[in-house]
Amino acid sequence: MNQNLNETAPPFPPETVWDVEGGKAAGIYTWFKEINEELPDGWVVSDNKKMFMLGGYSYLGLNKRQEINQAAIDTIDKYGTGMSGSRFLAGTTELHSRLEKKIAGIHEKEAAIVYTSGYLANISSLACLLRKRDYIICDKLNHASMIDGGRYSNAKLIRYPHNDLDRLEKILSDIPNSSRKLVIIDAVFSMSGEPADIPRIISLCKKYKAYLMVDECHSMFVLGKSGGGITEYYNIQPDDIDIIMATLSKSIPAAGGYLVSSKRIVNYLRHESRGFIYSIALSTAMAATAIKGLEIFEAERQQLVKRLHGNTKIFKDKLRSLGVPVGNSVTSIVPIHVGNPMKAAVAAKTCQDHGLYIHAVFPPVVPAGKAILRASITAAHKKEDLVSAATTIGNILANLENIETPELSGFNLR
Ligand SMILES: Cc1ncc(COP(=O)(O)O)c(C=O)c1O
Image 1 (cartoon, rainbow, N blue to C red):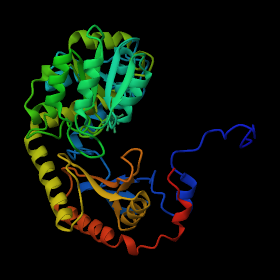
Image 2 (cartoon, rainbow, N blue to C red; image 1 turned 120 degrees about the vertical axis):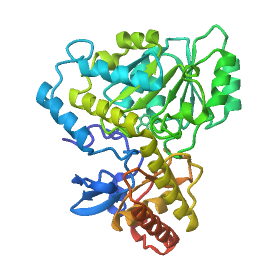
Image 3 (cartoon, rainbow, N blue to C red; image 1 turned 45 degrees about the horizontal axis):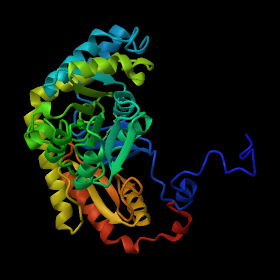
Image 4 (cartoon, rainbow, N blue to C red; image 1 turned 90 degrees about the vertical axis):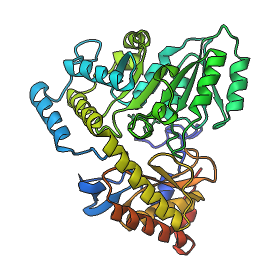
């Protein structure tokens, strides 16, 4: 196909945010690295090489648990692999209803609705929960799916500077009392692992009569002594948050995203949310996988979470002892601060060359000048591997100035 049909118009498609070709030419393009197999203890095979996975989200280390695999296999034998339609029509099975009931029970909420992914759950619910002349108020560093959901909504989207709750209060106080308003917030920010000040946000929402939706993708099953998420961490009542959203694709090794709330709100979403109505149902294999994953979580939550927290501490402590700055994460997300995006790219590539499956994250996903290597720890990791990985990272970062980067001029982060 002709690369550019119209020489007088800008190129189609427009340029990517990152100079992908420049990165490839410079030999520091690390994305889409194929995985051939998952091995025990947080190892994978990639390009026929064993690598230590530090970029995955299977926080509780449940992926490949035999009972979970078996649940998926049994379900495929019973239902097949395909779904016959959306949940609204031929796609609701007994498994979907059971899964939603279980999720609602774990969160001590009246009802749950499950979508095929967390991204879809956020954009599809936010697109319909509010109307014209309503307001959605959002932290600038919320996950893309929340920001995108706010954009798809007909409501006015207002974003405030990261963690600036005085600004949030000002915004809320300026909105007429008679308007519908929804504050949306990540419980734990996905790039830093830091928690939002949910207790203060709850009190602001109460004061200004705003509804509150909290994304718990990185806190549910992880935070709190028994993995109860942000409500356990801050000891707040489930009813203080109107809608909790989370994913079934990280700690729970399935796919899907959900919202838990009142029966009234969930019933509304079941009949108004276009990503639920006009898209295929979550596969039965994934529904069964999620149910089994949640059952294991319920039975073993204390031990699994204790191991996860212990592993995270080992990794962070070792990095800190080597002088590596790891920020203030309270979860198993470990942001390893590098600063300069070029250096972060080189560090990620060098880590990969040393057998660590890890990536760099650049602005605009993180603030300008704050590029990181982003590690995430799981309960499956072994102590000695974590210490060894942290040592490798510490050595690479200490040596970063001396690592040759001759082709870097070709890699321009726009
Ligand atoms: C905070 C947050 N919200 C939503 C999502 C989307 O979830 P899913 O991967 O299930 O689409 C993610 C995924 O990375 C996330 O980190």
